[in-house]
Every structure is written in C-alpha cells, then in structure tokens.
Image (cartoon, rainbow, N blue to C red; front, side, top):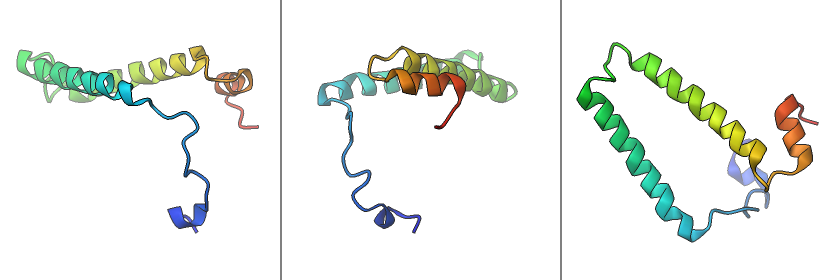
Length: 90
C-alpha cells in the first residue's frame, strides 16, 4: 500500500503548520520571484541559450539557502541538526 489510504492516521496532523498571517508574505515572495523572472527575460539577461545555466545557479543558491535555514532554525533539534550536517538517517 503506497497510497494515502495505507498511511492510516499518520500525516493527518501537521506538527508545525504555517500560520495564517504568513500566507500574505509567501504570496508576496511568489509575486516577486515571478517579477524577477519576467524582468530577466525582458532585459535579455536570461535567454533560451543560457536558461539551463541560470536554472542550475538558482537551484544551487536555493539548496544552500534551504540548508542554512534548516541549520539556523530554532525549531530544529540538535540531533536533527547533526543529522543534516552528517547525512546520517539514524
């Protein structure tokens, strides 16, 4: 059973949900990202010829930022932080 019905009650509650007042700034960030993409294409900074390099750069920056947030967050326990740093799953 690999589908949702096989999970039982697991995953029904979110332990740390995003607060309702945070939805506004998340939408703002999404609008800003779309605006940057449009400006990049409109100014010629991003072209089809270099789209793969730009996408790779964005993915690398986003990945590094994600790990920095995980390691710096006060909501991440010390044991979890160690697992992120070492790559251990135990």
